[in-house]
Length: 312
Image 1: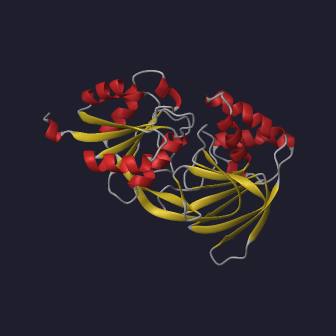
Image 2: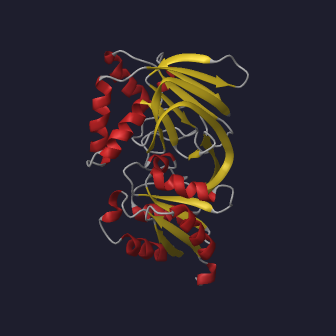
Image 3: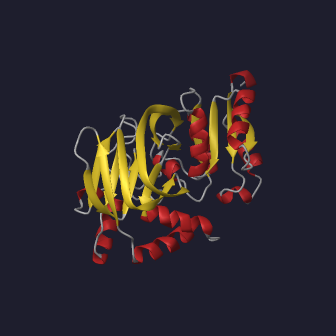
């Protein structure tokens, strides 16, 4: 196959993400791309003016696909630059948190993931805009999980063990807060909560399904309110999360909308795609329909729970 017939893929590599520090990643990607008849180009992030530099790299290389090589934070940055451009987004999951890769059924095996890029099956999906400032690709939340991620971000222990350690610390005494949700022309809904999740995806990165009722491309998103629960309810919650039945529990409320405002008292930690943003009292969320064209795995062979509602 002539080079002029091959598709060009620009890989945006976060060199400090997960396993990217362990071996010569670009050499391995180049080798696999050659096998799949793809031309690989690379840009490595430095943490300084990355968005501007990536934009210039996209202009220079004119790729067919831009691939985020890292975790959810890297995916978020790349997706924001590709929004409404027509250039496809792909994911090579190598981060501590790979929630969006799990959502799109992208395995961590590099050869398999690049094979999915080569198959080029894609779909336009919705994104969320938060406070007219932050883009959310996978999910955002207030309260318990955001505090876990903030502590996890400060710890030197990474991976699932590091997250689990912080999770069980928080589980012992989750903090309650008041929450008011305003959407459409309805009266504000008031709740007591330990966590509020905003997403149009389905899964946490662990594979727990927090949103069984949503679709990733229907012009709406879901607000999942997790209300205070007694300690003995934890095991039932775990079972419901991993069986896709969380919406049937009396301690869960799910609201579908395209725009909403949320007020919490006292202010709560907010995280967006695995990145802590600090405490906040008011949050405004708007759905951005069909904002980015993303490559996904349509064969669904690696997930325990099949995402039947995701990409229909």
